Image 1 (cartoon, one colour):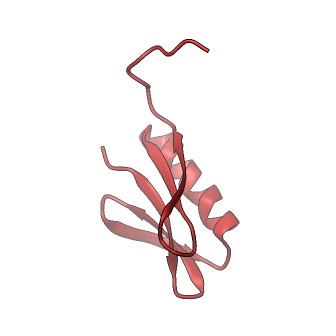
Image 2 (cartoon, one colour):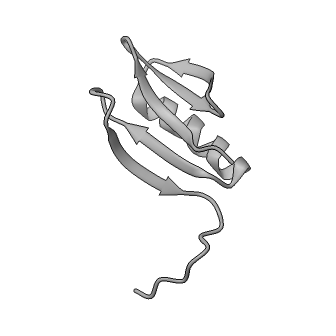
Length: 70
């Protein structure tokens, strides 16, 4: 199962899954909302990149295999 990524694409934001572009959006917020929906459906990790391309945030939408107290 591949992660879903929100990455900068020029002056737009692209959602990628399984190495393929799904769609592009004018804002990072719109791309993140669409990517979150895909991550929910696929039960995988959502990875949000900043304008510089570096990972800014991760959010798990799958079954976390470990039980971490707290």
